[in-house]
Amino acid sequence: MSPATHQFSLVRRALVPLVAATCLFLATAGVVLGKCNHDPEEVCPAGVIATFDAGGSLTAGSYETVGIWVHEGEVPYPADRVAIVFSRVGDGTVLRVDASPTSLVGRWQATVELPAGGTWALAADVAGPDFAGSLTLDAIEVGPPVAAAAGGPSTTPGVPLPVLPWVALAAVATIAAALGGGIVSRNRRRGATAQG
Image (cartoon, rainbow, N blue to C red; front, side, top):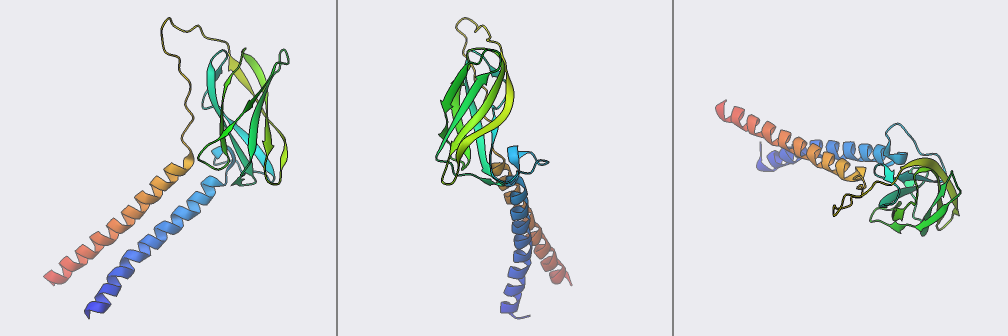
C-alpha cells in the first residue's frame, strides 16, 4: 500500500465517525430546540407564543427573577419589546414589568416583587417585527410572604440552565468518542499488521 493510499484510508476512517456524530448532533439539536417550554413531549403551535419560566416557586414580598420564552412556531421569536403583566385574581391588582432580553434569542427576563400571595393571571405583551399583541399565559400560584430571618440573606430562585449547552456538551462527547474509537481501531490494526 502506498503512503498516499494509506493516508487517505486513515482520513476516511476518521471522517466517517466524525460526519456521523455531527449528523446525530444536528438531528438532536433540532428536536430539542423545536419544543415549547423545552418539554420533549410538547411541540410548539404555529404563530407567536410565550411560555413563562419562574425557575421555581414565587413568594410574595420578595424580589423574584422570572423569565419568559417567546417563540414563533418552533423558532425563537426576535421580539423588540416584551412586558409581563401580572393580574391578581383575588382583588384585581395589576403589575406590568418590562422584561430585558438575555443572550439567548427569544429569552427575556424581569425582576418583580408581587405584593401578595394567591393566584395571579399572566400575560405577555410582545412587540416584534411582524407581531404586536398580548399573549395569555397560564396562571401561577404565589406563596405568602415569608418573614425574613433577622440579618439573614434573602435568596432568589435561579433561572434554570437552557438546554442548548447540554446538547453541545453531548455532541462534543459523541465526537470525542467517535474519534477515540477510530484511533483505537487504527492502533489495533497497526499492532496486528506488525505481528502478522
